[in-house]
Structures are given as C-alpha cells and as structure tokens.
Image 1 (cartoon, rainbow, N blue to C red):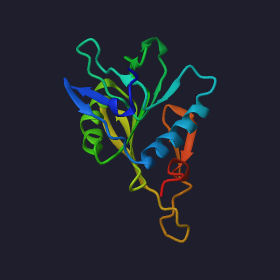
Image 2 (image 1 turned 120 degrees about the vertical axis):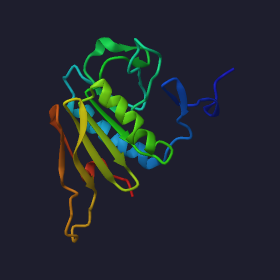
Image 3 (image 1 turned 90 degrees about the vertical axis):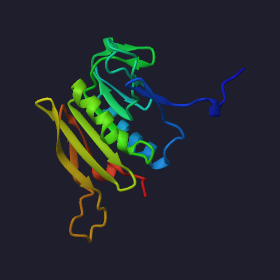
Image 4 (image 1 turned 30 degrees about the horizontal axis):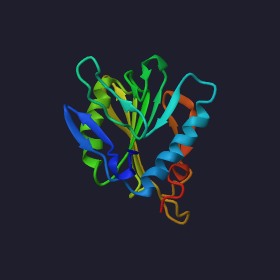
Length: 185
C-alpha cells in the first residue's frame, strides 16, 4: 500500500526521546531556509563540501546511540561520514530556523548538541521577527557574535537591509539580511 503524506511523520531523536516535527512550520520557514541554502550552494561550487536542507539525519554520536537531529541547513565537508540518509561526522555550519513548535529546543537542546559536537558556526533564525543570532565556537563554548533584526525601511535610523554576513569558515560565502529574508513578510 503506498504511503500517504499524512502517514509520514518527521521526527528527531534526542537522548532516546522521539520529538515529532509535524506539522510543517510556516511557509516563511521554508523560504528562509531556501534563500540561505541557494546562496551556500552557489558558494560551494567546485568544493568538496556539500550543503543540505532539511533532508539529512545528523547522527551526532553514533558510537553511543542512534539519536539524530535534522538541521534546517548544514554544510558538511567530510563525505566519508555520509551513508544513506544520514551523516555521522561534524558539520562545519548549521542553521536552525525557529518555529513555534521548535524554538525552545533549537535555542537550548540542539544548540548544546551542536556545541558539544564541535560545530564551528551556528545560526538561529526567526522568520517571524526577521532576526538572526550568529554563534561561533570559541574554546568549546558558543559565543553570540552578532545579532540582527532586519530593518528594511530606508527612512529608519537603523536601516540594515544591506548588511553583509560572511560565513566564518567560508569567506567566499556572503549574504545580506535582505537576501536571507527575501519574500518573508
């Protein structure tokens, strides 16, 4: 019997607990992830690194158990850790885009997982606020290095739509706040 869309439930497994990722978040969530993914994909052309968007299980400590998370966007560079629909290495960069159902987990549990696993750069994005927090791993601990809320009204004092953000480990990959939040109202 064919599997129906309503039969598919997207999950993550953290510390043995299953987290239901359904229903799908708002369309703005997918728009933001697609915007970032497209820019990263273009910047990685000719590279050994690969970008993934919402479709690869990150098994962050396979030697201990079968826990996994599904980052919204990530860059991996050690392809030998790719197998089937999962990855067991350490991503170089991860984005989590907040939704009402996942905001607390993205800002606490998943942030701690990524920090403990050595992910060098972690972005937390709020499509509703059109905001972004950028964390860098410094001495094994995430430090908030930048935080923006898009102001795209040129008449406002804090206009910042053209602010450029560059990935720390990938200096050829840059994007503006306007590009990140394009088509997000």
